[in-house]
Figure: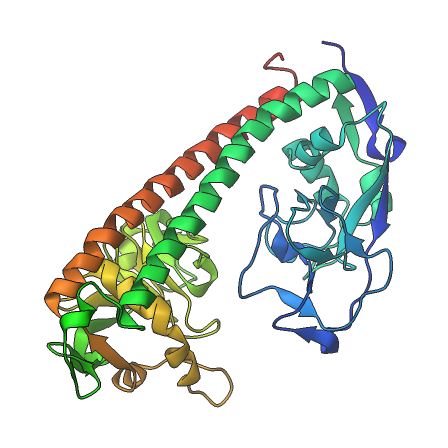
Amino acid sequence: MSWCEMTLGDAIHIKHGFAFKSKLFADSGKYIVLTPGNFYEIGGFRPRPGKDRYYSCDPPEGFILESGSLIVAMTEQGPGLLGSSAIIPRGDTYLHNQRLGLIDEIDENSLSLNYLYYLFNTYEVRSQISSSASGVKVRHTSPDRIYRVKVSVPSVNNQEKIASILACYDDLIENNRRRIQLLEESARLLYKEWFVRLRFPGHEHVKIVDGVPEGWKKETAWDVMEVLSGGTPKTNVPEYWDGGIPFFTPKDTTSHAYVYETEKTITGEGLKKCNSRLYPKDTVFITARGTVGKINLAQTTMAMNQSCYALVANEPLNQHFLYFALVEGVEQFKSRAVGAVFDAIVRDTFKLIPFLVPAESAIGAFVDHASPILRQIDILSTQNRNLAQARDLLLPRLMNGEVPV
């Protein structure tokens, strides 16, 4: 397989985005303003439910992104994001802001758009973009700098073959993500039907006493769970960090039930020197400061910082029931968050949150439905990590010709 040396500027043109006014941003609407936060570090489009910002006015012409378009992160909003690429998905209307570059022209005789997406996510290209970036606190690149990136590429026909192999992994990952969303949504809807609308099995034959089904109890969140705290080891002691223990913080929350990977890890010695326990799988985490009210289940044993609480259900509840109950009732926590500068959930907040404890038979019936769903989500999440690892190992070998196609 023959390869050709070229610079990206020989084959592409990058269009700058529009400086959308932040005063016109909103929490909902038709148009989502994309930022580098909508990229994964390794590449790919990252939806951010609850975090995306909408534009409240009609955008200027030429800055509505079409599905299938290739965009590049021009600002390093987070570590490793500079030069990351993503394909615009279907289903929503996304806006092209000034921190992103749009590949609006490509010489199809030299480069395949699908191949270019993966090319941007190689170490060879990213390192060149990073080395030419400007800025100290926040680093930036530009179209001209990207044009100077040197690459070695095979024929367009072989580029398409390489892209199709890698796309198989991405398609499987995306299918699993959709399955995870649907599975979790089904369990959330079931919880709402049974315990909010009170249409649980046999509800027709249960009396309502004092506003709740007979045998159910009105409690507070404080009464039905242990509220446990975390802590952070001293950051200036290297021996406490980069160990084998995941260290959960609000930055690590995910849009689905389980969290596995964390930005930081600590050592066993670091765990001894902070106020966090080693929390087991299925511990419920709720973020209490910064981004308030994000809820996840630990997918593996991990520690936690002081900006979160770890929640452990008291009988007759269990962790899976507690997770869905808190997801359904999280707005009550957000509305009662306190703080002079930043909103925060404090321990006393849990004493203010009403919590309806169903009869044990209803709890057991729900858990019989919900636990297999969470186990399936657990399996699919693990499959996605394995698929991503396999893809990332294969990517450089395909791109440098080590693995023939």
